[in-house]
Figure 1: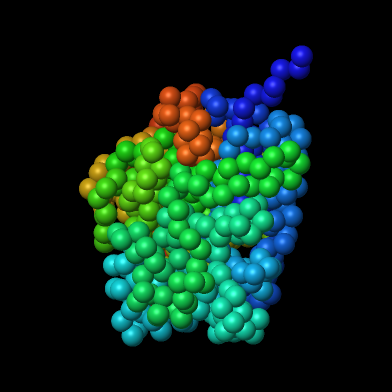
Figure 2 (figure 1 turned 90 degrees about the vertical axis):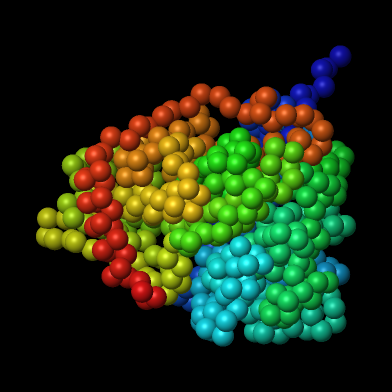
Length: 493
């Protein structure tokens, strides 16, 4: 008799540049992995789009690969790039236009207009967000006003706007469900984070009806039955978290005062504030996360739009790197950046500046500048941005954040992690696996499906720690140089 396969939970991580599927056993250890990239579309400067069919094809490809290795999982968890939004024809599930990606800046002027006529405070009070094109509300408004197919579907009441998690739910359930969770809904600029419901006044402001929005289900809830490619039966989707909240959950940050930083396409510092909503004075946002049981809780978040993107730019656009993994050795080959400073405002500046019109700049080059200095300046720029965010978290929370849990692909870079520890004066703790976003999605799905009672009993493992070494004088000198450069690219003061 052949033994049945070990039970697994499948995490689908639909990120900004690709889709990862990882099967985890019930000790939340990975047992199979697949990844597929999808295309990035840049129709004009400042515009970034995704094709829904390309994302869903990647989803089917990676899930089929993992299911072929491990068999049909017991449950599915989804995590995703958050603010990207698609318009679907509800009756068919077909995308009516390319999705507008979180990095897209096309609604910057509209955000300024709404701020100038006094809507910024309404948005901040109800949603915890700032009026910025990063979030979904003005993207939805733009699609309704500028895409004929979207407008026609709205007129015949056959339209639904979805973030990437809901896109996957609709696809995997074959149209039976169009559902999202509070962590993703809280990024739309349409969701009251205290009432945990879509807000009528905000829906009116952006011109979208409730019938055109996805159902909101608790993060460890029931999102329907998935028809996975290659599976011999349907599987319950029992957990959804936006990518940064999934990383927070996967790091075990369920209690107020715990924090993490993800070094992905962008960088995202998040502090769990529990049942208490913190109101930022420094340019951070308030958002929803999930507690140990998957119920909503509050968090402070700071977002830097260019993290791993910096290394990709050095490799793909400048050609000074052959492989992203080469960046550490090249950066270490020089003693410092020799006065070179990169401000990577490729998609504007996020927190704490919120300047969508800022543009990237490279300062301080001389005839003696080499590719090593530029690479080192690129890695330093990631750490500089995150230090701004960590300082803002400290000021808003009143907590002396002494330890930072890190994850994401760029967190594997030892030079960057040590630089982060030195600049932010914080102990940086990196787990053996930096794939905590997918692990968080698997963990919350396992909790939602009743496969795991306490994720704290299985999360954890070995870590690498980077202790801060710089003295205050060196730290403030370097941060001062960074802030001087940032001032030179800002358009909003």
